[in-house]
Image (cartoon, rainbow, N blue to C red; front, top):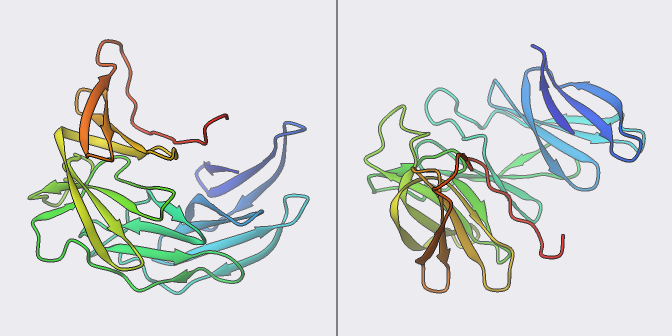
Length: 232
């Protein structure tokens, strides 16, 4: 599935075996494609709702559903970056809330928001500011004294959240301001951080200390980072 903007919003469905385009879905003002289940995806809509699409074996839409409005785009919009744990996809908001949306059969089900940054002077910021690990923890890149318009600048702390218990487990201090984060899926995970010099800092999550830097000597911009299972 590939999100398209031509200028209508849509999703192209591609058969990877035949290398053919099998369908083009009009998402009706809803953007991006958040996968769920075996053959479903959801999209964020411009009016604060979320739409979900379930595909049949031919790539056609078998079912389309919509949630009620929950994304307060005017006052506290959600970032489009997300992380998924089980059947729940989590989005941070500009004002430091965590919004979970359960995706599966029927319409997307928004969960109650959690204001995890309440009472602090920090807010989420960065290009890839959220990720998760295999133990169900969520990592969010946070910026001190963030002002309106600072949501892409990055931050110097990563907060580790337990979304079920609604607890901030710990705060990882970064060696410098950074714009993207990702956590490996290994038994002993590490965290990769794209710093403002566009090099990758490696953090050992057993100690939360930086152990080395990769890059910084070639022309590269690792804005988006993707963890994958070892052996792939």
